[in-house]
Image 1 (spheres, helix red, strand yellow):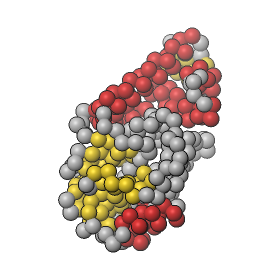
Image 2 (cartoon, one colour):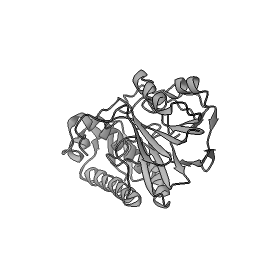
Image 3 (spheres, helix red, strand yellow):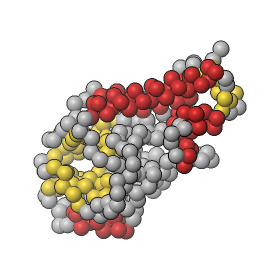
Image 4 (cartoon, helix red, strand yellow):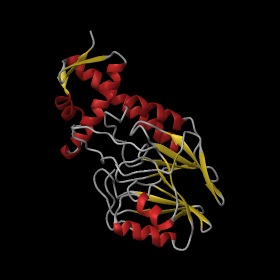
Amino acid sequence: MALPPQPWPTGECEQLEPLVRRVLAPNGSSFTFTGTQSYLIGIDQGLAVIDPGPDDPDHLAALETAIGEAKVVAILCTHTHRDHSPAAAPLSASTGAPIIGCAPLVIESDAPRVDAPFDKAYAPDRVLADGESVSGPGWTLTAVATPGHTSNHLCYALEESGALFTGDHVMGWSTSVVVPPDGDMGDYMASLMKLYEREDRIYYPAHGPAVEKTRQLVRGMAGHRRARERQIVSLLSEKPQAIKDMVPVMYKGVHEGLWPAAAQSVHAHLIELEKQGTVTCAGNIWSISA
């Protein structure tokens, strides 16, 4: 999906439904679309903030303006990439609200990363397990564990309206990047199927527009991943090769600036295929298992 024309509603508080408002952070890019979307859930007597976003003074000021005199009772993060969770600490300090949700996670690796690096300072007051909830006046948010994009990724279901806040797991504008060693394609596919079996009315992702045809989107994303897997097997059936040689063929219609991200997802697919015994690797050359 192409980026919409500017100006984007950065810093504005948009009412999406009675219990849900949205504030867009000023961090738009080819990996974040128009930016990270922070969500305010509830009413003045008790708000929750989902994915407070980057520790950016303008974004924090916009969140505090949107909050106004309301009481914040929970700050929740879907995962700990630095475009999602760093604002949690200063927002907690200014509001007194606890940080609740995903577990802390820092991956130490010398390998180049194309996704946002992890937030090393993230320190939750309470970690939610799959199915656990946090509530306030008129709302209940239930954690839905969706590992894959990251191992600590959670979605949050707003029980009163049928909305699901999907973070980076499912987005209408793009497929999620799965970056080893923490990103896991097998987990990602299982998490897609987990959402497919649910009956959520609407998805509110951290980036991009809301998704109303929820199961249709999930089915399409799963099909896309399976097609990529078949493409990889087909290329390796022709000859053993390195990821750097496969990406230009597989993503010839994609801007070269996004090829490093594509290479990471291809790597994630190959790791999963290796687990299944379909492919093997020697050095940096992958081939079909004998």
